[in-house]
Image (cartoon, rainbow over all chains, first blue to last red; front, top):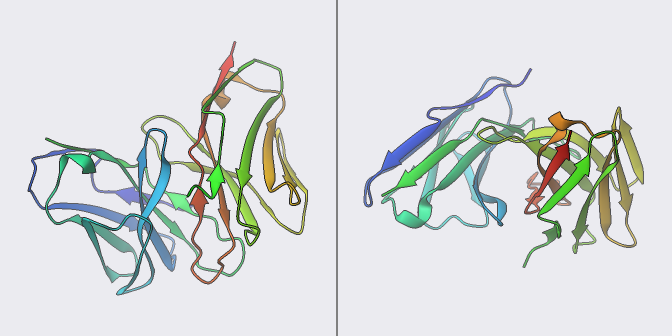
Length: 114
Length: 113
C-alpha cells in the first residue's frame, strides 16, 4: 500500500513568515507533486518533480519554491507567506511509468496565514 | 482556461439509486482519465480510471463511460450508498512525458438515507 505522509495536518502562520511543508512517500515513486485545493477551483498544480533535484513549475508557482534532495521527500516552501496562500495543500506521488500513472495523495495540510 | 470541467458543484441522490457525475474536457489530446473521491480533511483517493482506447470501465459499483467525440466522461455509482457522500474529482492527462493531470473543480455528492 502506498503511503504518502505530510508533516502537519494544520498549520497557522503569520504574514511574512517562511513556511516549510514536508511530504514523504514510501513507495520509491519517481514523481512527486504539490497541489493546493480551494473551494470552486479544484486542485491546482503548484510544482512537481520527476527526479531528485529536478522540478518543473505547475500552473500556479508564484510565491512558492520546492526542494527534492532525496527521492522520498518533497518540500514546498512559502518564502514569505501571504493571506492569499491560506489553503489546503496536498502532496501526491506516482510511479512514473508511461501511460496511466495513478497519483496517490497524502492527507493534506490546512494552512492558515494570518 | 478550464480544460476539465465539472459543471455540477453538487448532487443529491437517494440511497439505492444511481448517481451520475459528469465531466467535460476541451483538449482532444487527453488520453487518460481518472476519478478521485475526497472526504473532508482527507486527501483524494483513487477510484477508477479509463484510457481513450476504451469507452467503458467497470469496477464493482463504479462504472466510468468515455465519449471521445463529445469530450465527455461520466461516473456511475449503482447502487449509491451513504458512504459514497464525498467530493468527486475527475482528472485528465495527455502529456505522458510529464505525467501531469488536470483536475476538474469537483462535484459534491450527497447520498440520502
